[in-house]
Amino acid sequence: QVQLVESGGGLGQPGGSLRLSCEVSDRAASVNNMAWYRRAPGKQRELVARITHAGATTYSDSVKGRFTISRDNAELTVALTMSNLKPEDTAVYYCNADVRLNGGLWSNYWGQGTQVTVSS
Image (cartoon, rainbow, N blue to C red):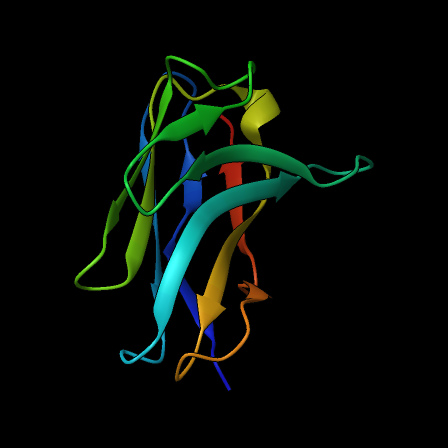
């Protein structure tokens, strides 16, 4: 069973930076799109950023210019570098990826979520 293992997050200060990382547990997997979502208290989960296998990126308007998504196709990892943090960035952040094993069907997987809190 494929797992997405997240790390990073925690407490950040307004104007500061944090970095999230996510790794696909099965190194033999093929990975297509990778993304980060977040769910703030009392709100629905929303897309933060997405990156294709070729490296094309999209961002939500709320984080554009502040967050950067990147990936390492050899290591099957995706990272989210968050700069100029704002209190409204406080949320649980989830890694998401389209993964295929042994040439089978593509399936979509979620990480367990990691808490990011922005507060002074």
